[in-house]
Image (cartoon, rainbow, N blue to C red; front, side, top):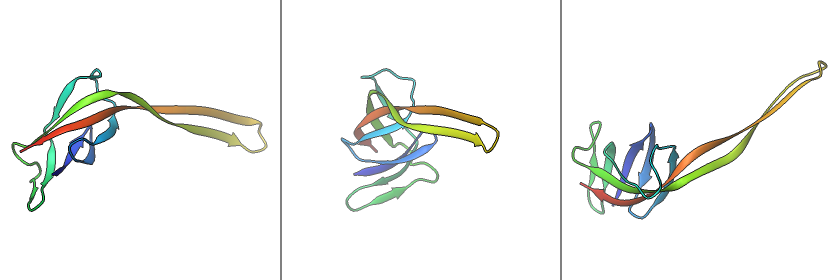
Length: 103
Protein backbone atom coordinates (compact mmCIF):
# COMPACT_ATOMS: atom_id res chain seq x y z
CA UNK A 1 0.00 0.00 0.00
CA UNK A 2 1.18 3.52 -0.74
CA UNK A 3 -0.14 7.04 -0.40
CA UNK A 4 0.53 10.53 -1.68
CA UNK A 5 0.42 12.87 1.28
CA UNK A 6 0.86 16.64 1.56
CA UNK A 7 3.17 17.74 4.36
CA UNK A 8 4.02 21.43 4.85
CA UNK A 9 2.93 22.33 1.31
CA UNK A 10 4.94 19.58 -0.44
CA UNK A 11 3.73 16.22 -1.74
CA UNK A 12 5.43 12.93 -0.85
CA UNK A 13 4.81 9.37 -2.01
CA UNK A 14 5.08 7.14 1.06
CA UNK A 15 4.74 3.50 2.06
CA UNK A 16 4.87 1.90 5.52
CA UNK A 17 8.41 1.77 6.98
CA UNK A 18 9.65 4.55 4.66
CA UNK A 19 11.92 7.26 6.03
CA UNK A 20 11.49 10.68 4.44
CA UNK A 21 12.95 14.14 5.00
CA UNK A 22 10.32 16.90 5.20
CA UNK A 23 10.47 20.64 5.88
CA UNK A 24 10.91 21.50 9.55
CA UNK A 25 8.07 20.42 11.86
CA UNK A 26 7.68 21.83 15.37
CA UNK A 27 7.68 18.46 17.14
CA UNK A 28 10.26 16.67 19.26
CA UNK A 29 12.00 13.42 18.37
CA UNK A 30 9.96 10.33 19.28
CA UNK A 31 6.63 12.11 18.86
CA UNK A 32 3.94 10.33 16.87
CA UNK A 33 2.07 12.49 14.34
CA UNK A 34 -0.82 11.99 11.92
CA UNK A 35 -1.06 13.57 8.49
CA UNK A 36 -4.65 13.81 7.26
CA UNK A 37 -4.05 15.56 3.93
CA UNK A 38 -3.95 12.34 1.87
CA UNK A 39 -4.35 13.01 -1.86
CA UNK A 40 -4.18 9.43 -3.17
CA UNK A 41 -4.32 5.92 -1.73
CA UNK A 42 -3.04 2.93 -3.68
CA UNK A 43 -3.11 -0.77 -2.98
CA UNK A 44 -2.32 -3.86 -4.99
CA UNK A 45 -5.61 -3.79 -6.89
CA UNK A 46 -7.35 -0.47 -6.26
CA UNK A 47 -6.38 3.20 -6.38
CA UNK A 48 -8.45 5.87 -4.62
CA UNK A 49 -7.99 9.43 -5.82
CA UNK A 50 -9.22 12.23 -3.57
CA UNK A 51 -11.22 15.20 -4.75
CA UNK A 52 -9.08 16.97 -3.45
CA UNK A 53 -8.54 14.74 -0.38
CA UNK A 54 -9.39 11.12 0.42
CA UNK A 55 -11.94 11.33 3.23
CA UNK A 56 -11.08 9.39 6.37
CA UNK A 57 -7.54 8.48 5.30
CA UNK A 58 -4.57 9.24 7.52
CA UNK A 59 -0.85 8.56 7.48
CA UNK A 60 0.73 7.88 10.87
CA UNK A 61 4.40 8.65 11.40
CA UNK A 62 7.07 8.96 14.06
CA UNK A 63 9.55 11.83 14.16
CA UNK A 64 13.15 10.62 14.25
CA UNK A 65 14.84 14.01 14.65
CA UNK A 66 16.21 17.02 12.86
CA UNK A 67 18.72 16.99 10.04
CA UNK A 68 20.56 19.73 8.18
CA UNK A 69 20.73 19.84 4.40
CA UNK A 70 23.76 20.43 2.21
CA UNK A 71 25.44 23.80 2.30
CA UNK A 72 24.44 26.24 -0.43
CA UNK A 73 27.06 28.87 -1.29
CA UNK A 74 25.86 32.30 -2.42
CA UNK A 75 28.68 34.26 -4.07
CA UNK A 76 28.21 37.80 -5.39
CA UNK A 77 30.81 39.74 -7.35
CA UNK A 78 30.95 42.96 -9.33
CA UNK A 79 33.73 42.98 -11.87
CA UNK A 80 36.39 45.69 -11.72
CA UNK A 81 34.91 47.12 -8.47
CA UNK A 82 36.59 44.93 -5.85
CA UNK A 83 33.22 43.80 -4.49
CA UNK A 84 33.02 40.15 -3.44
CA UNK A 85 30.55 38.63 -0.97
CA UNK A 86 30.43 34.97 0.03
CA UNK A 87 27.66 33.61 2.22
CA UNK A 88 26.52 30.09 3.06
CA UNK A 89 23.19 28.61 4.09
CA UNK A 90 22.12 25.19 5.42
CA UNK A 91 18.39 24.41 5.43
CA UNK A 92 16.95 22.51 8.39
CA UNK A 93 14.69 19.50 7.86
CA UNK A 94 12.88 16.88 9.96
CA UNK A 95 13.37 13.16 9.41
CA UNK A 96 10.12 11.18 9.65
CA UNK A 97 9.45 7.41 9.60
CA UNK A 98 6.06 6.32 8.22
CA UNK A 99 4.50 3.69 10.49
CA UNK A 100 0.98 3.12 9.13
CA UNK A 101 -1.40 4.14 6.37
CA UNK A 102 -5.03 3.95 7.56
CA UNK A 103 -8.10 4.22 5.39
